[in-house]
Image (cartoon, rainbow, N blue to C red; front, side, top):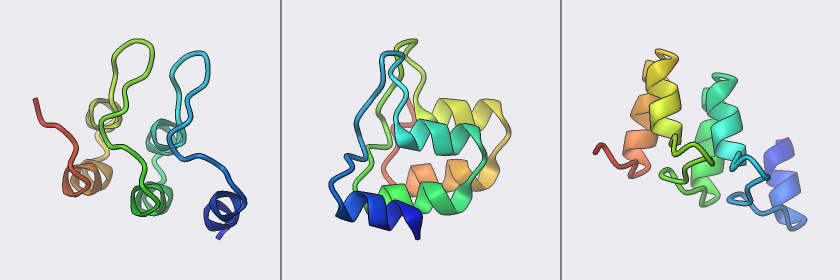
Length: 80
């Protein structure tokens, strides 16, 4: 898996760009359940918000991604 390779070579799962985007937010926005699962298993923070204050759970809910919402909640996403 590409994510596993990148992380094993030092990629930081919670690094954010200038807009606050992190790998987990990007995976959520692309609707990639497998990537979301992998990132959470590698320690991605389920509550890491972007520069606008949107969390991965907020983005998944807005997009109607029920499976991703469930994974994020299992990964301790804040419901409030």
